Image (cartoon, rainbow, N blue to C red; front, top):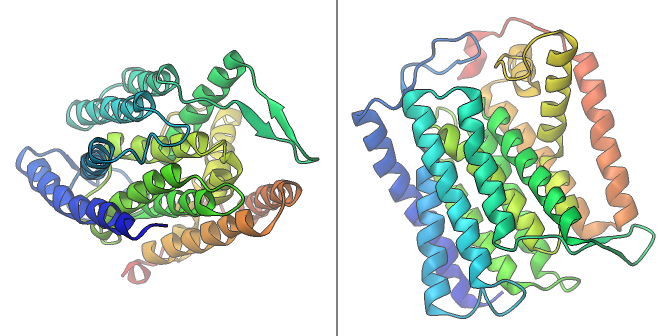
Length: 348
């Protein structure tokens, strides 16, 4: 890691703090807010939305500044098309998020924007050309399989973070941890991808700056665009870093499995998988008596511990770690009651 990297990483952090405050004031002025009119919403009063704009603007400004003033991002496997396609996909999510937060789009309408963002990423050349074989060596991937995988992967990541966004600081914190882990892995001697590492760390700084506004009690929420953009950031970085999908999964594994189990449960019960409710793990933990900060910090600790597996173990052991995550989720869902009244004094 070169010393000058501190400037863009800190720049993303500081700009995110500033831009988020500007966006917060804009959202309050134009009444683009989240009103706690449902049982699953525990915040008090109207909280401004559109927070993802603060992250996106900070990330974009710094990335373009580095791209236009240095050759760092294009010194390796990445090219200008990758960067512009990446940022363009984020802009699509921001547009869709604004429209959804402002006009409350129907699910089918809001789906269009993640679909376009994922498609643009693929068209810009973001792909997987090989996958590590746990037994040794690699599997070469054909272009159409790569496109299908990247599309499904990005949609899955975007909807994981979108559906996870129910507790203050949870999505932004998990996203920051995942981006930091991807960046550190890219810096390791086994991979050493300084271009990818810097891009990931700029994203980390940008998300971390927003997290200061978003921790409980949150002063602004990510909104529709921000919640999908965090998943998009992590998903794209995992792909362009040489398919570090295992790293992303180990960090975001509990939330991803939670979303899968909740969707399966809703489908089994005959309800709509799109219907928001309090069946997610973070809500169950909250209803069990943990405060929002405690639930968030618990997720952070688990994400960091499993993310560290990337640095310590081989591919086979990473698969075992993912299996352990799966078992933990099954045991947790069986152990936690479906609903237990939360003690208000514990949410301080």
